View 1 (tube, rainbow, N blue to C red):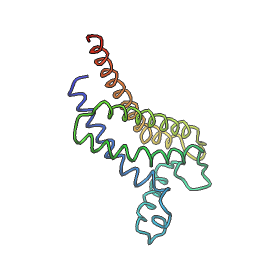
View 2: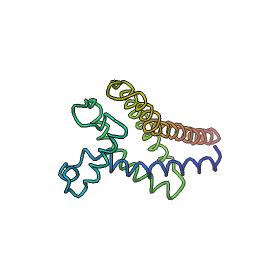
View 3: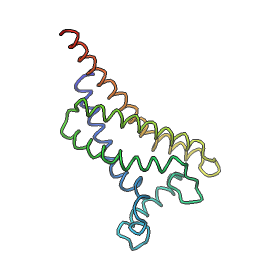
View 4: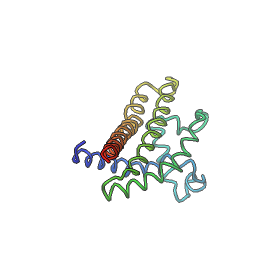
Length: 181
């Protein structure tokens, strides 16, 4: 891979993580906040409640819909992973990508992040694909799967493939040096 391609991809990843952080704080992690902070109209973070209502009304995403929408058993685990893995990695990635140049250990962490993100996003997409058409229309599914979740999956697959390729190149160079010794 050329250095200009690597530079371009690193900038794409930086933009992804810069977008991902506010989404984490304003959408994905909100259910983990005490409801007194965001649900009552007088609460300091009530705008998060209004954002959530807008998101549900606009996209009909059943993962975020209030009961009686059935939340799959895996979804709380995925939310927990976003808190303990996505959030710290995203903060670290922004700092690291701003500085430029990923080390081998950084590439390994982003490979793990990419695989985990691709698997959890694909799981959510499959579940959303199965939602009752009487509740979520085919057009809404196209927007959710092709746009919102599809974009995350595409970046995760690209990140995974790119980090795997970079690490494979590093390992190949290391093996070649060992053979020459």
